[in-house]
Length: 98
Image (tube, rainbow, N blue to C red; front, side, top):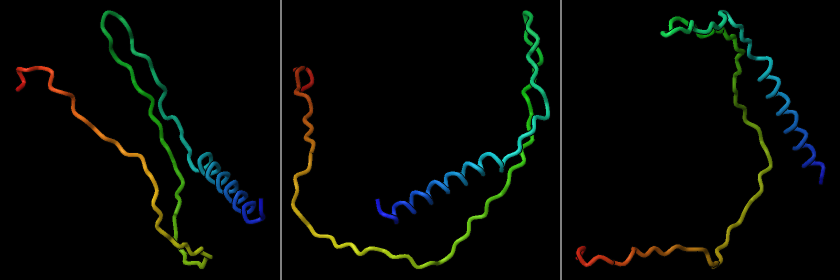
């Protein structure tokens, strides 16, 4: 493995760590109301779902122009065999269909 690949892998690991950090630290959820089960008799009444307030951070995506090395690719045509499919409908077995 050459040093360029090692740098790319290290960069990907750092990026994953940053994304995980944002996932854990950019969201603050506080439960504002407890859940309560409904009263159960012959009939069901009441009950409430919990409520939450969520404060989330913001992320701004920007653009910048940079020069990067890009390989030049040439394309040539070659004849190759590729898979195909042939579909045949079923034979007419019922004379009443004619």
